[in-house]
Image 1 (cartoon, rainbow over the protein chains, first blue to last red):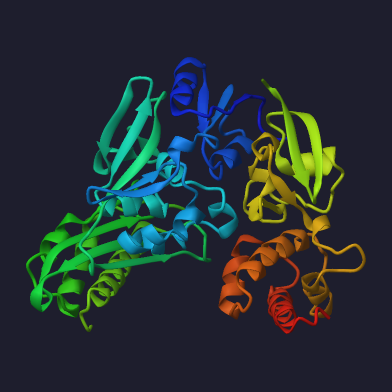
Image 2 (image 1 turned 120 degrees about the vertical axis):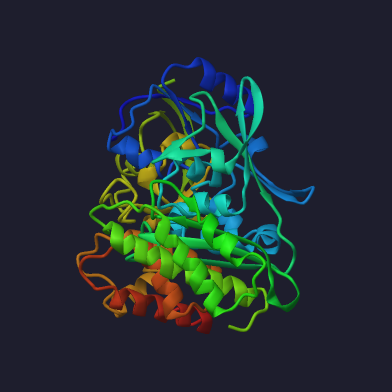
Length: 289
Length: 161
């Protein structure tokens, strides 16, 4: 028994969970527990109350609503990984999920938990950023919608108020036939990435880029969109030269430096992985490069 | 509410206990039920030694509280063997030098039991990817991978031997 003592609450309704979170002192949400419980075992985190969302049915499910894929925050990563809806409408997310931890942790870990934890090396926040996802946050004040660009505020910091939780994630669905690419580099499959890139490409006639999205993770203190790369590609005919010129814009980001990798190396990885992700996206959109 | 009434079915047998909320599932199995086959290595979700099946899905029992498993069916390494002898996978570990000190073995067996259940004919790459969540410091993994592929073959052949 390693964590400090706490009281455990297992609400069945979202409203009940919001009330517990708003009224109990020093309370925290337990989603899948694959990041929180290690921190509790180390006693980095000590809570007086743990509110387990595992029995709140309203927070599960996946559905297409008005051109968006709406995913309940408590959907387990493994269930998403094997979801036909996700594979059909947002295959980039399915591809990214295979890199999230290990199967044992994906069986428990949730999409909402990963987003709320906001680890800079995590895959799911970067994918949400690439999609310009909207998060629906719940509290006793009701629901509010937050664009993902306004959700992450820095190193493991988010726009969540202390009494708020993520209820659902909404991903705008790209046109059928769009391309996607996802590459990361880690010392071992499932380890924290030293760098990674997620790309989406929508191509028109003749391989002209109608729309591009490129997001990096494991590089800076929070996932970043490479706006300059997207602008450089949009309206151009996609080929190897255009992709490598666009990926070079990843040079502009300010990477972190730590015991796992220095800033220069991460900057190098960011460019290489951006190019690989964009090439995959172009190929999947039907361009032969 | 620091203590909770909890009922968990472990290897087919139902257990009702009042437990502290902070008791991990791993400690519940080892201390309350004396099922010490589930090993605890790192206790923060890295080594995989404590892996068990919760409702048929592999999970790190050091990263779950026993109260979260209320109403669940848990399978530990003790639940993998038939009444007499070893499971096909366990026998393949013996035959292929899949273990040396044995500390990581319970987690390895659970992880591979799930893999072989869902994928009867895994490639070596798929076996190695499945095993990335389990650390072994003795074998260099070669024997473990060989045992997994051998067990898959034996299960497909239906010989079980």
